[in-house]
Image 1 (tube, one colour):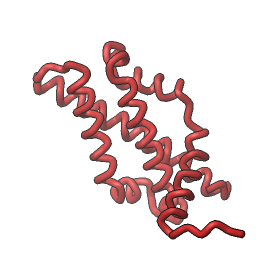
Image 2: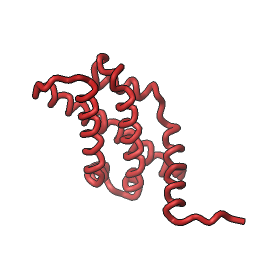
Image 3: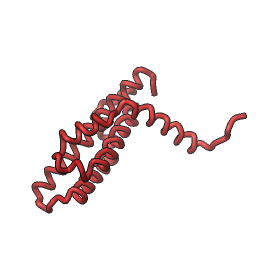
Image 4: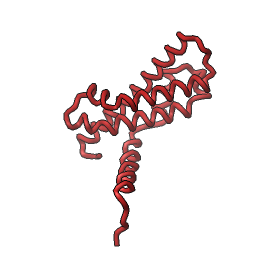
Length: 141
């Protein structure tokens, strides 16, 4: 006998299975190395967990939108398609680091931090996009 579930439950279950499979490609060492590449060592103790969450979300966002790249859209078109989600992740990371990292209100420091947050999210989005596109090509989605 089969279990009856509604469409939303089925879609959510399918999404969770996909996310678990795609996250197997990501390692904690990669996340820490990229964090140190974009941010100072002084931040790591305070904001490491938040940056890990944002890295995972950006990676999954890129992987989710990679299906459009597989079906013929360029990476720039796909990037424009998910602009709002990426901007939300950048803003979230920026405000998280600004609050917990005890950054002063110097405008130049804040602007530099924002650009680093943007680069960090963009790099993880691009990795997720490439990984998801590769999995689509190999029919592993």
